[in-house]
Amino acid sequence: MLRQMLLIRRFEEKAAEAYALGKIGGFCHLYIGQEAVAVGSLNALRDDDYVICSYREHGQALVRGIPATAVMAELFGKATGCSRGKGGSMHLFDAGKRFMGGHGIVGGHIPLAAGLGFAIKYRDGDQLCLCYFGEAAVNIGAFHEALNMASVWKLPVIFCCENNRYGMGTAFERVAAVTDVVEHACSYDLAAELVNGMDALAVYEATTRAVDRARKGGHPTLLEVRTYRFMGHSMSDPLHGVYRTKEEVEEQRQRDPITQMAHKLIGDGVLDQAGVDALDAEVRAEVEAAVQFADQSPDPEPGALLTDVLAE
Amino acid sequence: MPVLTYRDALNQALREEMQRNADVFLMGEEVGVYQGAYKVSRGLLEEFGPKRVVDTPIAELGFAGIGVGAAMAGLRPVVEFMTWNFALLALDQIINSAAKMLYMSGGQLKMPIVFRGPNGAALQLGSQHSQAWESWLAHMPGLKVVAPATPADAKGLLKAAIRDDNPVIVLEGEMLYNTKGEVPEGEHVVPIGRAEVKRAGSDVTLICHSKTVTVALKAAEQLQEQNVSAEVLDLRSLRPMDEPAILESIAKTNRAVVVEEGWPHCGVGAQVVDIIQRDAFDQLDAPVQRVTQADAPMPYNKHLERAAKASPEKVVAAARRVLYLD
Image (spheres, rainbow over the protein chains, first blue to last red):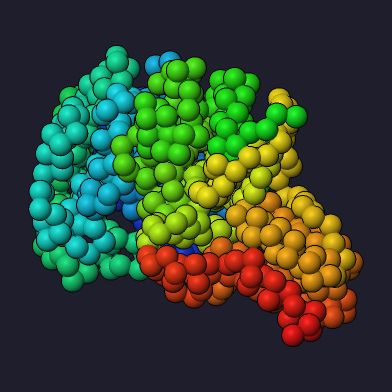
């Protein structure tokens, strides 16, 4: 888990660099600070479970096992990217890994998660669908419609709300009447759990409980995972902006999920600092190789413009 | 050949395709216990059970998205909207999820889903329930859009739509459900993208689809009494649109009137006229005329409503204009 979190951190740092160099275009939403959420939750899944995300999904893609080369190449818009250069940062896909995309309309993918759960149940499978979204998506109708139907039909879905406190620059309490997202579970008779999103093990344990509920009888769960985004909303948003203070960001950085886990592992005698450094060096090399791969990969052929509009 | 209503032809298509492929299921408001708001799904719950005939809450965005998610996993959902007016709530899922899933996943995720339901005005239902959305939907690459006018086409196009690996919009005519016609039994699949000449003629082509086919056929009869031979070309499919069939008819008649239920601005007719001016300009003997709904929300008052809609009289008048008879 530590290695996976480090991989996300170093990947995102390199993505920021590449963005500044103009190698990545458009919107690019970094996951720095939230690593424990993807890592803790995805480790509780099986390979045949479905995963679906919002547009802040580089971390989930990496943990799900999409090679860093393919994710970076997608950010670079290259033909070797996991969506062949047609998706970009917000639309990472790998059907083989059952990674059903990053989706760019806030909350719009939450019903899709229920649909994936519907298909599992239709086929009498024991898989589940894990769906990530930010707390800002809780204010949109799609969230409520999907939770209601998932509960009525007992669909095996875990709704994982990554509450990083700000929808772009708007603090959640400024726009939400109910600020504890878990409370929404009461309206739809879902199981719910509030989780410390800076602790990967806590996320893992809570997700494991939700996984058990989903596999045994398809009871859906709403997880509210409290986390924090250390960077701006996207690359065009400065580190803390005008909507939060530098002090607040600094204070949150003291809860860095990677530092916390490294300290724990060292404290428990599982690793020493040299071991942590070695892991870090390993993932830095992996990310460096991904950048090189992306850099050297070809753009999609011009003809790709008009392919994949319709299936044959 | 058996004579069926448009409604029963759709029902037959659904039943046959559900028998043929266990991945096909129907979901929507009132499709099960109530037997369908327009009885298109009559008897299906009894035959296929609640797993495959799924009553939903009134939550178009949500259940359309659930259909899309199920299609991502390889099922073949048929999502019924009680009417397309309510489907506006689900446009985000139709446009942002279904239409571009294959493209933005770089060809990985097919989207074998059908969105269907009644489209266009009925009688005195007021502004919010009397709308024809085909030009909105046909605008979007990644969708196919069909609008059958006859029971036979309703069956054949719905079967084709369910078998298609792309999202297909099936626009049914609310006022057509009770119309009757001969419908081939069993394997009757109408290929998407092919227009059909519903009445042959030589002086002017009336290009239409869905309910306006009936309007155009009536107009053609009236024109016949005035010694004008009108050809009625039913587009049947709006995306893809059968450009060769349009051009072939224009080559014969050199004159055209495009009839549709929607509003004039950026309507389906505008696309048809573009095809004609681009590829058949030299064959035209007159500017193409269009007959549409009046450029206003639909009024409730029955006289105003009648005045707003395309009618045989308006089509006859337009045909006479392109023939320079007035």
